[in-house]
Amino acid sequence: MKRMVCAVLLSLLAGTVLAKPYQGPDYSGSYDCKGDDHQEGAYTGVVTLELVKEQSDGAYGAYRFKLEVPGFGTYPGHAASEGGRMAIYFANTNPAENDFGTGIARFHKSKGGKWTFTKFYYEPEYKGGNHGMEWCHQR
Image (cartoon, rainbow, N blue to C red; front, side, top):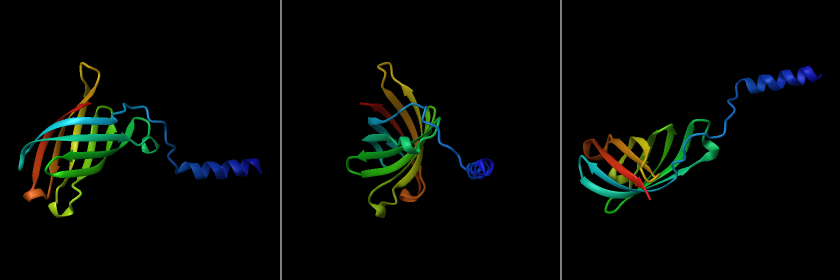
């Protein structure tokens, strides 16, 4: 009987990926950002990142993302990290703008021990297509 129960449990677990505790860097916090948008030019904003530990696994981090840009609005989204890189999806809360996109960021520690990141982003539908860069420093 014990062998049968063990065999059933093993077969159930065979297709299951067991999550490992998150072991990567935690980039959570608020960041002051300066950006250069191909369509709109220079801008400033604030990024907030929040680690979602229950969805993170080993070296892979899951994050809630929010960018707030005065005069343009709020861009909530989500992100996934591995090591010093992060993929980010964001979308303006006003859907009429078609202002959404995907970015890739690279993180480093500053001399003061705070996180900084540089992000390239692409927006396929904003004003016929758009891209830009952001430089952000943790508060």
